[in-house]
Image (cartoon, rainbow, N blue to C red; front, side, top):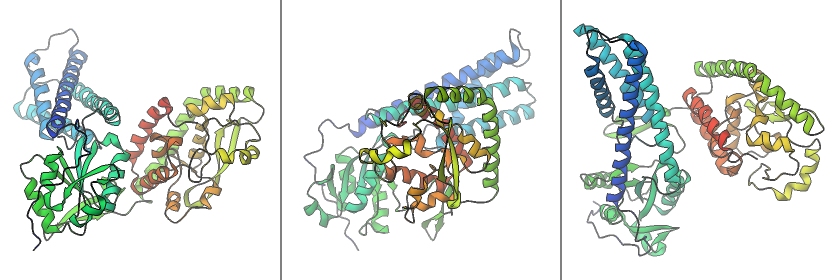
Length: 492
């Protein structure tokens, strides 16, 4: 059996002396949770007051003493949120689970109050309850969203509460996991050290890139304690057998340090993953992506109906833009460019013209000034772009005519970026999976930085969407698109 004797980990001399301790991080975490409690209390108090004012106005209701019932309802609501772990640090701050739990806590309480009122024959106004719960649910979701965005901005600046992570695994897998966690700093996983197999300590010295190596597999709990880590993230390694991993879990019991496992399979969304215990072994079942069926039909219906309504509502704005384009420079108002859609079928995508009429002829002269990697051409100060075109591109108004492509069934509201035939001709096997679904007017690429993204990151986001699309994700992306357009980052 492999020895489990623990040795004191090597302490890297390059660790920053002013790095926040585990106690400090836990204090920031508790402070954030307390702020959520205060925020939720304020939202629920307002919701109850709005429900009372909307139902009763200036009149005084008889029977039920609402001066006592209203505070009791707020308290019960907070307890319901607590019971469904809406203040758990493993839930708040990232992912859709926080919003789902908040909604479920509110709905369950609403059902419990309705049943209790019926059984006890208490004449609580149904109008008061309906308005209070409706306003409260929406208010809670908006408040959580606002608090999360502030937390994400703070984390991106390095000032917000984040988990301090000790990564454990082989050197290659450690570096891969570090790169993945740093790609999205707003998720709140700050890598502060690594533990690698003992035979690799000497050649690696005490650093993996800029990550300090603080010990080997024989001293993981001590290493985590030494650097103030509150999370141990285990990635692939041949030396971390099931027995050693189970013992590591036992050793971390009662320490306040979380143990998380990073599987080799990445970029798979939660709804496609199901854990099934078989003979004590948690098997992860991954469902195949869904490209047909009822959900696809619903997506098509939503795309076309929403696009038709949007075209009708935006007709005055479209006419103003068309007039501005016509008056600004010589050429047609609309620009039709051949793109590749679902299944490799080519179609003409519509845009308001933002460049001079001979833009394609001038491209050869500008190729050397390309500011992006991969197969796309992008320049921040492209001389081919007109004055009105720069404004339209900044606010993505040039893409509004693509609503016609959506109505015609060539595009979707949300999907991968529609590629040029010249790009598709150079696709390899993996990248070609972008063509399994319809391209979109917006997508993960747009809400994540647009032209500021590298070619690799853009492809990664597109493939993630293809593999994990859902109607709920589409709604989330459409909502985030508003912020991305207003922000204007990566639009040129």
